Amino acid sequence: MKILAIDPGYERIGIAVLEKILNSSDVEKLIYSDCFKTSASIVFAERLCLIGKEIERIIKKYKPKALAIEKLYFNTNQKTATMVSEARGVFIYIAIKNKLKIFEYTPLQIKSAVCGDGRGDKKQIITMIKNLIKIDKLIKYDDEYDAIAAGITCFASERNL
Image 1: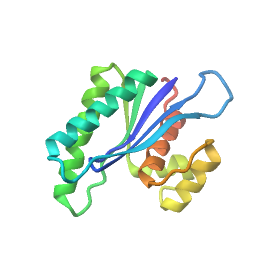
Image 2: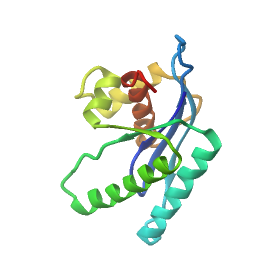
Image 3: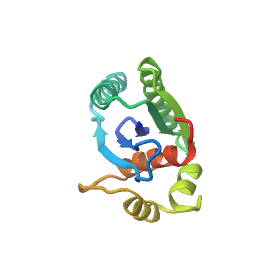
Image 4: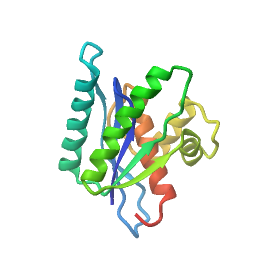
């Protein structure tokens, strides 16, 4: 089973594709990960189009069966939260269009699944991810780790994928 996992955003989007052979004791395998970026110099609607095209490209290439996506944590910046919500809408629309099951997780659920504690900080999350799944590349942005964590959470939480 392959899962597309997304840490939603519109400037930087964490994307990962993870796989686990069902009925196997093998751990999850990271097939693909990236931090897709859009430029602030591009009109917001065009940025949404670019991220939508990238997600569709990844779905066509890797053929995941499910989407694991982080639910929004509303911070004090309403404009940013609204724009990230719009990006999440694009991701969910594309997932439904491509017949993917959708699983949404709060940051607390993801931290609990990865660290065993919902209060884990970024450093603890990254350390645990490196212990849970083999990563053969240098990851520059936290967004990519957050996407991987969402995918790990999905495999840990959902028994009926």
